[in-house]
Amino acid sequence: MRHLHAAALTVPTLALAACAPTQMIGGANPMNAGLNPAQRLTVAQPAPTATAMGLSLTSPTFANGGAYPAAQVASGFGCSGPNTSPALNWSGVPTGTQSLVLTKYDPDAPTGSGFWHWAVFNIPASATGLAQGAGNPGGTLPAGATQLNNDGGQPGFIGACPPVGDPAHRYVFTLYALSSTLDLPAGTSPAALGFMLNGKVLAKTSLTAYYGR
Image (cartoon, one colour):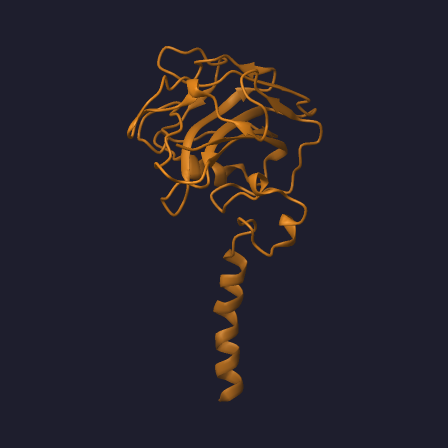
């Protein structure tokens, strides 16, 4: 009976292990080896095995690891910034890419699951960037691209507005090159989008800015 009882416990234990996050901030997972804090994303970010593979993401208004621009501060949640989505440029899209996805995510938001500021999917593989303001009402996205609601409940971009006194938050812009386009129902959340990326990512790269107040 003791042996049967131990065996019965093994199955749920293995099941839980299979559901364990593959990438956590500062965790002991070997995937974190050699990564700086800005690269150690939370479980809310998908963790496909793909790497940058030459894919590069830049902005003319901020550098990776630098200060978050004032133009991208939110208008709301206690902030009164312009709330303008930044200009972003990319290159090195790998052969076979069928679509691109761009997300902006704050893993330091005090929600227990971070905060999704922006999510755009089905960006054409031929696109090389997004113009400033593309994520705002009246902005222009590449043909076929679709924005999801951010965690503020509105479609498109929402700027940074961390709690006063918090250490500077990380605002992580991530570009994914996918092997297919995505067919997502209306109302899909950015977190669900992240789940749907798994198994489709050919390459990914990130650009991180820091902001506190």
